[in-house]
Amino acid sequence: LIKLNKEDKLIIHSVKIYSKLNIELSKSDKEVLIKSNESIFYLQHEANDEQMDYFLNKMNQHVFAFVLNTYDEVFNICNSVFFLPASRSGLYKAMSIFSSIFAKLSQMRHLTNETIEIPALSEPISDYFLNLSTIKERNSTDKYTKFATEIEEKILGAQIQFNHDSKKLEYFNKQANFKLDLSDTSSMISEIAPIVAYLKYIVNEKEDTPLMMSLFIDKDRNSNPSKILFIEEPEAHLHPEIQVSLMNIFAKLTQNKVKIVLTTHSNYFFNKVNNLIVSGELKIDKVSNYHLINTSKGSIVNKEVELTEQGIEDSNFVEIAEQLYRERLTAIETF
Image (cartoon, rainbow, N blue to C red; front, side, top):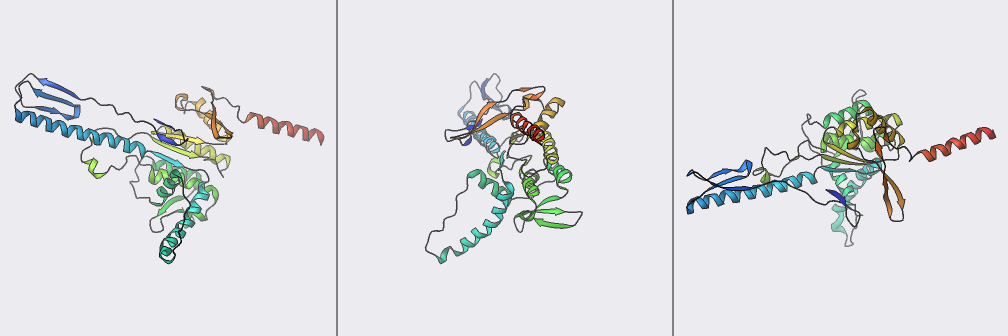
């Protein structure tokens, strides 16, 4: 369960792991039977000390493996949540500039007795920077890669690649045969590129498991939870046509164990979601819509907007649209 705490920080509030352990007395004289996969243990009615020690040892092994399995489940849940902040283009350029400055400061720290203070970054922003600068190669057949490729082909017309030497993202136009550092590209490209990079390199179909745990976890268990992508203002610097294309891809992602949480001011995103609901490509039980308002305490949820088979009630943008229309009519009459 993911929720806000008292400080309005998004936290994993609770994790429920369902399992059962049955211990039964065996009616036969066979040796102790352990069925760890089913969590069933059989103990003889009249077990001797040696059989009892054997049984308890097997029990301990199973409980230890279960604890590691539980840790693995929590580990995977924590590593299945990804946050892409607003102003991705600006943040990435800042990251590119300040990473070299921080490196220089680190080299010069022995030349000064003064404290060098580096501005603190919030944990989500720090994770965003680290994810984009510590990318590893992965299997190109990962199911999320195809969505990154679709964005590259249908929207960017080029590839987003990670340079392992410079530790930076690059824009590669294969047709024109040239590369650009992402910080040198247009704001449209540098806003979309991190989304591509996350799908291409970071959001893995199967998470890596620490070596020690991998020796004990049950390989038959499906411990890969749904991925959760938080994307702030995906419409920034995008032409309306591109916004609609991007929403089509987001809708496909939701059918592949990805939950997407968007904050947006775009009526184009809003209307495309409505069309997807009406066409049946998005099920209403898979969609929620919340209206946020600004208060003295920051942005809060004003209400959950009603959802029907006809889509989401379109009232958020109506007032300003009507105001502009009346303004236009008045201007025409005056002219």
